Length: 369
Image (cartoon, rainbow, N blue to C red; front, top):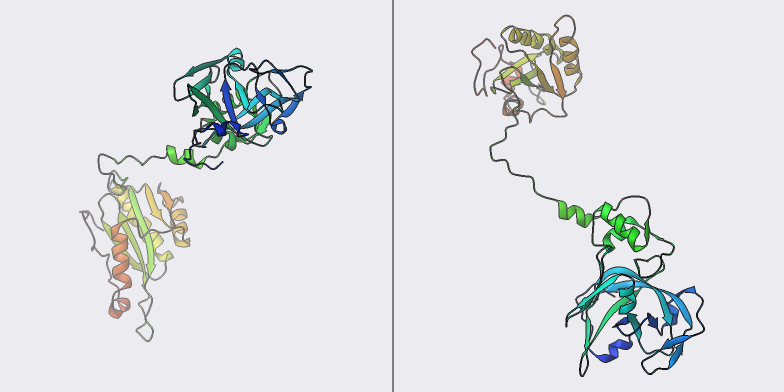
């Protein structure tokens, strides 16, 4: 039956539907005229079932009836296995014995809207919420949709062989409980869950939550003093087609102090040419109590050389490189200086400045650059 908000008609003809079970407090056993839906588990007795007329109807089959309980709107609730069901072919209705269930430890409560059977051991409920009015009373029924043999759940009689089922399927059928509760309920209901854990997208969405917005502004600047954290990048100035030949010192080394935002820009004839001058600068900073501890740069060859030389016995600079794929996003100085240099005029390409540049400096250091 589709998962929809349809409602069963409140007419007496509905009682003869093969999937409608009438909750009967006078019946002492479950019985059904649809013998084909019963899975035989025992030999049929020689006696019969006595009806309200006092006549005995022969029992042709004894076994389990398996299916899925649906509510009055046709929405699937949970799998069920009725045990010790008597097949009586000349019966007109499917009778669900309420007293048989009470004898097995279930508790019955009810109102004019429904009769509810509750199993205290695992709080499982069977709700007879299909109400058929009669001339002087009400008939309460439940819809049990037939299902394949892989389904088995609520045990109403002696235990039998457990049925294997996928953990995701039982997790869905039992109402999206936690893994521990699902396994405990499944064992009690007659399941043997196969290996693995349930992967439920609905539960993942339900547990998702937006990250808390910080009460105070959060900065990505982890530096606590000048010189502690430095960002470094290299760029090259290329000549224009049919333009002047670029100056040999066309490789720029950009460096910025994360704490102050102070920038340093120098030019060299080769990319590796920046290694020794950079280490000399850092050595001077170290003598001025501004020792470099962290250097953020990409993993280009000249930067690897910088790391190796700086940590060699010649310099003994104790800094930790933080290699990243791109460094132009580390600091506005790196972004702005790269844009300035790569978009400058042909004359600038032909003659880079001799000294370090001071532009894009927020809080310059008073010391020599």
